[in-house]
Image (cartoon, rainbow, N blue to C red; front, side):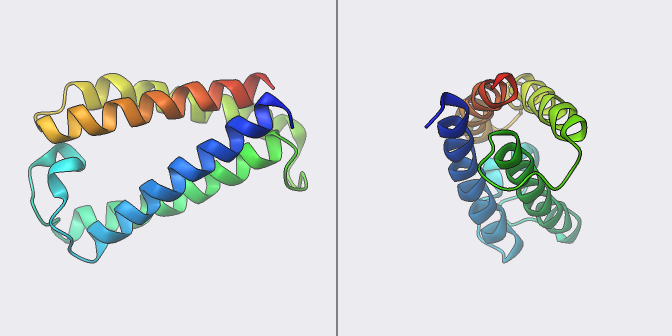
Length: 128
């Protein structure tokens, strides 16, 4: 198995865990201090909708990286997958300072390392 394939699998595991976390937020789990700036213990409706959108995005991100790592059939043009992988990697990289400056200490200390890991894994896959 290639390093890109291993990184893609690990990336999907992390995204899956984040999707479960976001789903818990959607259903009212009192974990809001870890997400969306940490201002709400239980997310209000607008942020719950944001969590649903995040889950969908995580699935799309995982699909792109699995295609890039050749673990699922390439159903999009290769150029779209290549560019998409780099765009998502950049998105994760932007998330590092955004989480690092969160007013929520819980979000800073939990999500900053998570998004840093996602950045590293996504770059490995994008390079692969």
